[in-house]
Length: 313
Image 1 (cartoon, rainbow, N blue to C red):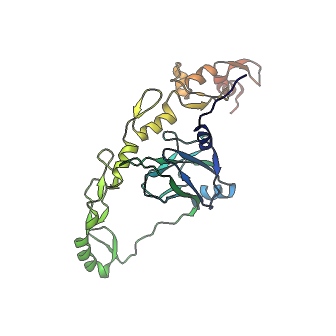
Image 2 (tube, rainbow, N blue to C red):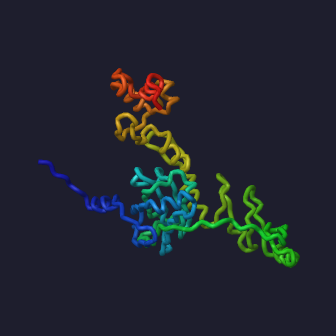
């Protein structure tokens, strides 16, 4: 007889891996304890999907948190990645406080079935011990066309905004006394004089933040991360690595249909050109009878055989 002994935290960990349904337009609320996370899923119906494809609407995932201790990070993936993680996801938002993630037709990875991961982050300046209450919602948002400045406007020399020509003199006099342009390369944002001390740029990537957000940005995006395969990268490179390059990533073999580890690059140069993984190179070397002529052909050469011998597309 075999007996499984579960610790006191086993039930909590099991509950974390539950996909809670999230209906578009219907808000959900809950509590995430420190260091824990919650999963949600939402389905995009055919009608909504057609509107997204035609760029009539976009999907907006809003997340509002209601306590002062710590923060909640937002990660979104699409099927078949049911449980997005810190390193394996399609989209993410790490802004302090409330978050809004906008997904549209230009997001090529967007699919009709998506999953959301909410992770309770530990407060950087000290370990918080209270739960984090949140309010999240996924819904449609109509797109709008960009506005074109009126003909009778002039660009302000300070803030670069278009101002009616009849008031441009008064505007520039006021603007030069109260507003300042960020001189960081590629920024140029207009700041109030009292806001310039809190506007900072990351020394590594150059992105702009409020001074209170820069420490979390450094922790999330620039802290070295260790992949199980042994490589060390920052967050954005790690997400790319684990989705495309990591030999331990799971893929669906195009020949046997199983979920397997991708492995290293195929040994055969021709298979590398075809984009086959190490497993697919070996798995595709098995032979099967051709449906048209009955000849035994390697699975990875079947498409070429059908085109070259039987003139099939």
